[in-house]
Length: 260
Image 1 (tube, helix red, strand yellow):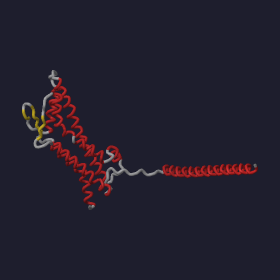
Image 2: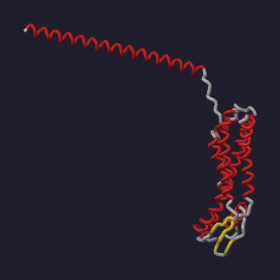
Image 3: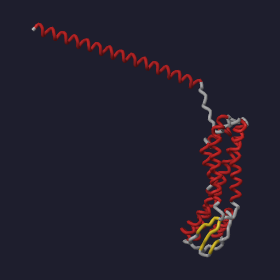
Image 4: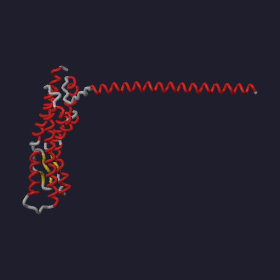
C-alpha cells in the first residue's frame, strides 16, 4: 500500500467518528417508534420527540401544581427523570471523546509530540481500546425506546408493545459504531509504520544516576559471584580434608588388625 493511501486512511480514521455522530443525530429525528396498547397503536414518533415528551411529562408530574399523584405515576416519572438526562450525558461524553481524540491526533500529526496536552491525552485515553469504550457511550441513548415497555409493565402495570417502522434506529447506530472500531483496528498498523500513532509512549531515557546504579548492581553481582566461588572452593577443600582423615583412619585400623 502506498504511503499516501496509508496516511489517508489514518486521517479518515479520525474523521469517520464525526460522520457517525452526525448520522446518529439524524437518526434521532426519524419517526419510527410506535407503541401498541389496549387502546390501539400510537402515532409514530422519533427518538428525540419521544424523549422530549416523557421529559415534559416527568417534570409536570413531579414539579407541577397537582401534588396529588398516584404512587405508580410518580415512580414512573422518577424513572424518566433519571434515565433521560443520563442517556443524554453519556451521548455527550461520547461526542466529547471523539472530538478530543481527533484534535489531539491532528496536533500530534502536526508535530506536538511532547506537550502537556499530549501527556494529558495519554493519561485520559491511554490506548485505542479505552477510546472505543468512550465512543461506545454514544449507543445507550438508542436503547431508551426498548426500555419503555418493561418500565410501563413493571411500574404502571400497563402492557405495552414497541413497534419500529421500518426498523429500530438502534441497529444503524450499532453498525456505525462497529465500523468505527473496525477502522481503528485496520489503521493501527499503518499508524505505527507512518509514525502517526497518537498512543505511542516513548521509553524513558536512562539518567546518569540510573546508569551508575546499574553499574553498581553489576559490580555487586560480580562480587557476589566471586564470594560464592570462594565459598565453594572452601567447602571442597574441607570435604577433601575430611576424606583424607577418614582414609588415614581406615589405614590405621587395618594395620592394627594385621598386628593382632
